[in-house]
Amino acid sequence: MPINDSMSFGNFFRLDTTMPYVIHLRIRRTGVAGKDIEAKFRYQHPTP
Image (cartoon, rainbow, N blue to C red; front, side):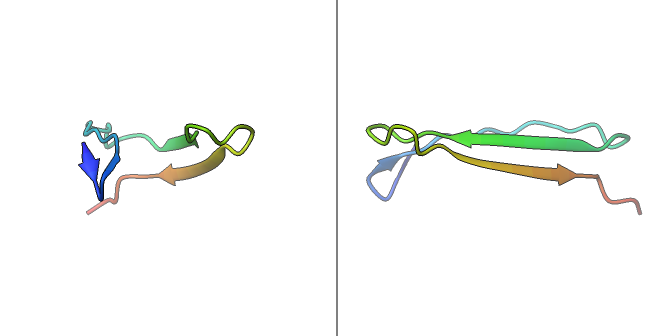
């Protein structure tokens, strides 16, 4: 999907509410070799 004249990717998915998750992202940009950006997020669904 284009955002500010740049292509982007997005998605939606359900996460089971009974277990924690670690989401690991690696972002690579075209024409920028060896400069990957990595991020790790921990997610636990809030309990009521």
